[in-house]
Image (cartoon, rainbow over all chains, first blue to last red; front, side):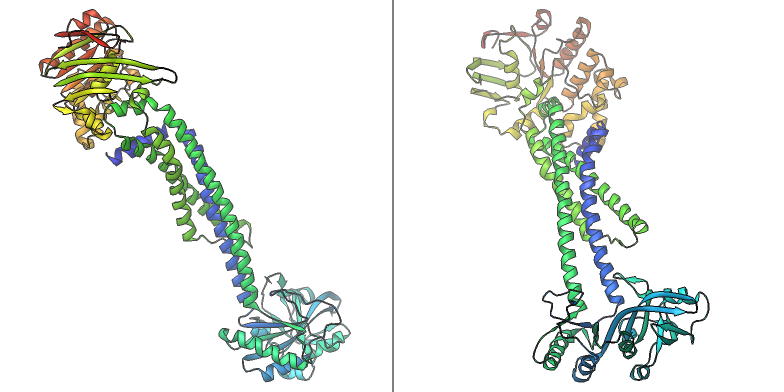
Length: 402
Length: 223
């Protein structure tokens, strides 16, 4: 039988019940759109985290004091019984390890920063000359702390963008003396705007040499040791090597944790994958519900058109002709619904980033194809039963049906 | 052409088995115009359905065109209905959502004729039954007589050898009824075999032979 004619007939019958057809399609539209959207949001979040971590440098290992068993835990426990990491630990790693480019002893604290009558309580990061290049940070004017300044405990500082603006306004800050805690520091550089990355506002930080920070905070306890490994495929060896060096130094105890950024990334990836799968699964359930809607309406349609089925059979329609006709109808419903869902999801995922800045969406081709095929499958699966029922009607009974 | 031998048909209902046809022998020759008469419930419609391959007898043999119909599959019966037989019903049975010409072309859809030819032939058939000016009208815009003429055009479109009409004038006024009978008589002259079921004596008398059925058996005129 003429397939074009079948499609025309099903179009006619769907059009003659516009509202009903649309409402039925709506189930599929929502289901398909939900699958695509949730996957695209999941993928967007993944890209976002990748990009943010990439912004903070690559091939990085971080050693924190204290042993944490879980990988990816950010903060070291604050208990004082834990042996601290000190400046020399970093120097030793840098000197002994073959796989390490650099090891930066990082201190973190906060202190009052003052210039003339402006003052603010600020995060202070103590680091060495290579920290900026490792962390992909850049100066806007001036320069970063140099090696000789670190060695000589010189009181110099590099201001984050926000700090500079608060203290100096539009005036030139280079060369000025600001007081941090009780001492005066000379401003040698101002950072380029970096913004918030993974919750840390890099524009709101003052960098000083680690050696100066030891004096400022009156401690030699490091916040962490940030290590740049030579290449990505040496990360594992580097981790082992660092462990051995530090265990030896710490009297045979592993009282520190070496975390790699990639490990953290891996953990987050895993979480995101599970989340995306769970959400897409829930969305898929709504697609199935949409399919049941199609089946329901097709059963009604078959019942309503019992007489038509009888007439068609009397005029020579085979069972397969009737089956095909109703199957095409349910597939038309699900495929138009699927297309509508794709368009809807596309539009929404295009619009979302304009309203929610931190939620970049990324339409995935595979999710579109999958959702579309799934909706087609739903149309066939839930269409078969009503269509088969129609095709098996006895012509005489069907003709007598009022 | 049509030959029925000892045809029985019973319906199995939940509690009883109803035997509607109790052994019918019937011969209809080519190009004949016969009328089947009988009171309601006598089984004449069931007989017509069996002749029209819409229903299968419980037992007995039905030879159509020298072929045993009981050996045919459902799909083959559908093809026979499509090509060999044209049905005309009391209640016209046109599809309400389609205009007259779409209704007329319907059988051609199931014999694989292409759209262009379908429409052309449907228009020719409507012209033949004097309805070409109503081609684009929907069934509810046509009078009873016009609807039945459209139904006859539909029955004729695949040039079947046999037309089976079940009370074709039952829903019509006497004038329209006469028109329909005239169309049948004209077709019969062209060589189409026509079997019509009726309970109106004056309609039946237009036929060359009257078969009377009573209580599922043939009373007269079966040969």
